[in-house]
Length: 122
Ligand code: HEM
Image (cartoon, rainbow, N blue to C red; front, side):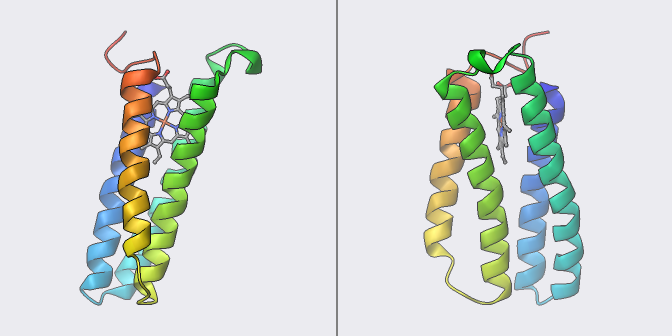
């Protein structure tokens, strides 16, 4: 489950930058197609994230750190959409890029450092 989770968000990250560069290159149609695939990946990220939470055997075992991890994960998905939408409409995105960097560093810290499950453990 953790491998599926990581694979989903790594792929999403790659497609996000592909969609951005297509927008920058003026290929709006290509960007739209990539964004549709990206949206399917959001569902996979969320489904695998919920799958990982389900491993904790009961909602009472989901500590505040896990809730924070889930919320920051959803925040990143929201930012993918906001940034792509605003780039498509040629609106300012700098405030969203700052959030993106903060949220991404936070999610990596929470996922890899703070929370116990790991892709390294069998
Ligand atoms: C783009 C969004 C997301 C990113 C970049 C992300 C990133 C990560 C990372 C780096 C880990 C640690 C993997 C490891 O330790 O091997 C992880 C684990 C996890 N993620 Fe996400 N995640 C995202 C979205 C979500 C969402 C939406 C949820 C909940 C619905 C979620 C729930 C979890 C859970 C429960 C774990 C296991 C935590 C642990 O015990 O280590 N994630 N995620």
